[in-house]
Image 1 (cartoon, each protein chain N blue to C red):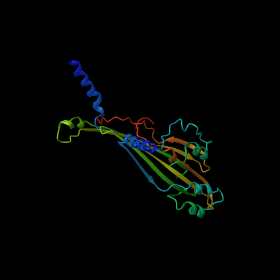
Image 2: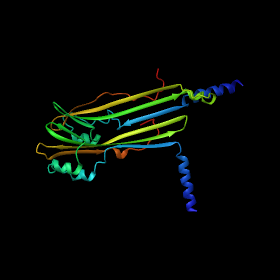
Image 3: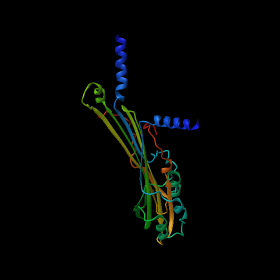
Image 4: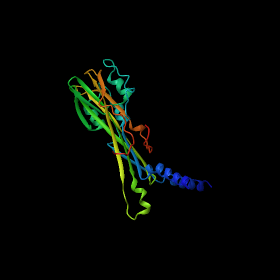
Length: 138
Length: 128
């Protein structure tokens, strides 16, 4: 008797997080890693080398010392659990108890070129660790 | 016999793809690859670029040179809707073309890439 109660309790705890659960991911461009840009040598690598390896930048802007190329990428992770689903079979109303969380990782890789299109320096705008799917908002 | 197998196959595909959603969104027209190939560095003029590709989406001044930017965005979304558990994934990429013009009005450089070719409908939101 106890064993069967424990079994159903464990089953409920295991299944609980997947009730009314939504997992969504939105990505813009392929995120670049420090390994992807390790080939860039300031004073030596040219725009052609960068474009050949990384593709065309999303933006080119003018700066006082030359030109700035920017590669942008976004990774959004959203997860949501509606615990109201547990009560649905037993209530005439449609109850909701929603926990959700959105993690937005926005990053950009910038390369500065001199007027002859040779790399001067490069850096990630902000190195964000990828947010996990984690619906607990607290 | 073949017809019945085809019908059975169609029913099977329709049955297996229930609870799926496919969406797609695009911004801008496809950048014509033939037009890009027709642009010659040091020979093609600004007027010819405009004739081949139309007006740019963005016009910039970089280091005293005009730069025409053309872009196109493509987004593909796949959803698996299992009533109590839903997975969705939206992937978005862009095609970009920069035409750098010299002070004489001739094309100095053309840089382009087509990232949207590798974009796929995906459902699974985990991993890369």
